[in-house]
Amino acid sequence: MLIVYRNDFGIRCVIAPSFAEIFRSNSMQNGMLPVVIPQEKCKDLAKDAELGLDLEVDLEKQEVRRMNGKPPIPFTIDPFRRHCLLNGLDDIALTMQRGATIEVFEQRRTEMWPWLNGFGYQGNKVPVASIKSTARKTDW
Amino acid sequence: MRITVDGDLHEGVTSKDVILHIIGVIGTAGGTGSVIEYAGSVFRDFSMEARMSVCNMSIEAGARAGMVAPDDVTFNYLRGRPLSPKGEEWDRAVAYWRTLKSDEGAKFDSEVIIPASDIIPTVTWGTSPQDVAPITGSVPDPSKISDPAKRASAERSLAYMGLQPNTPMQEIKIDKVFIGSCTNSRIEDLRSAVKVILAAGPEAKVAPNVVAMVVPGSGIIKQHAEAEGLDIIFKRAGFDWREAGCSMCLGMNPDQLSPGERCASTSNRNFEGRQGSGGRTHLLSPAMAAAAALDGRITDVRKFLGTVAAANIAAAPALKTANVFDFMDEPAASPAPDVTQSAQADSSPSLPPASSPSSVEKFVIVKGIAAPLHIENVDTDMIIPKQFLKTLKRTGLAGALFYTLRKNPHTGEDTDFVLNRTPYNEAKILVCTGKNFGCGSSREHAPWSL
Image (cartoon, rainbow over all chains, first blue to last red):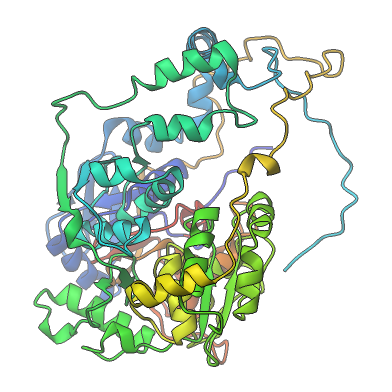
């Protein structure tokens, strides 16, 4: 069964003059779009919002359309991120597609910087024993 | 970004003061888009633990990470530790590590130069790590701020913190003192606080209006501190000596501030509600925290320097210095995995097809209600407070979104915050007119709850 994670409250797009970096990339990795436009334009859109008007955010055309006949407001976004958002591409799946390159890197890393592997590393994944959870649910 | 601090620090000024001062200079968005390298004689002279406190708070300046080039201080710290390379591998590692520094004449995207002499013991007055003042300074006056967004922020902060403009920082009484957190709870931080207690004389006690706790950063640090007798000095002066943990840094456990309580804290974030709903946080160094505990208010630690202090310290029983290696495991290799146990996947995992089903919904066109928000520097503690971070599921957090703004802390009822009102309770878009949205902690729960 495919589980699609829907952002919870339902907000899929935040428009602001600027974002903190980690929050911005977390948003995009979760299918949300952070739109950066000048503060004056944010204030204009906030006026629409205060009148209860809808906004339409179009990632393909890279613009925010307004319902009151005023012209749409353009925004820019990194093309790679735009591609991922438009296609619902997941960072993990994308990374795994580069498995061969990762292998080559891992070999090189072991040769050049062997201390980074840690003690007892035999080149295999360390198996994790499955533990039947007998702990009571603890909560604070 | 490279931040260079050269010169000699004034006595009583610690690495915590340095990083608070830096964030005051560049702001919580100053480092956005950058990794910060800290350079200059001040950082060269810092111990590893002092450097760690600085790098720890780099995110509060908006940066992705903070770096200090490795040197002999670094190698001496690492040598012989249980997981450090040994023997020939150690030599190879050190040779490589010595190459890890910026080239002479390297060009940085931005450079900030701060003279060490500019920095004195520093504290925060507001609800952002950038709201700093020197200890000799005062709470700012919002009416003197020309930028309307900044003025509104300052007014909001002062109202939350219960402070009047132009109040001298040294007049602010406190209710609690917290010495702990990953920013400042290492052995050197504890020694720094103890030195202030000894300087105050053998009768020094936590002020009657204050509850003070000391939370060592790890079990090893706790053992180390007890071996040096630091716990006895804290307890004798009336501090609570605790087990290691996050404790009151973020109030995700019973160590919390009650609404309106004021705390002098060695942690790294003073956002609204961080240490407890309605709790008021002032960030400062461990030495300053100890001084505040003894004085009952935020105070200048430098009055615990000087000849009387020196005499008190000399008169106290000498503290022994324990060796941290006494508390660490033998540098032995971890047991090799039992190869028969698991079915190892073949070395190349099956690659997902290019159009692999993913758990992320597509974003093409979104049309809907937009909710307006007129706050700048909206931090992720405000977007989703810490009590909701106990889950790893990305769903079920709708009720947590902007919780402190949506629920009245006394009655538990819904406020008239925009997201509680129709039509905005069905908003698909949020329009924020303030900059630096999403600053502070990196919690991924923030976008999840939106």
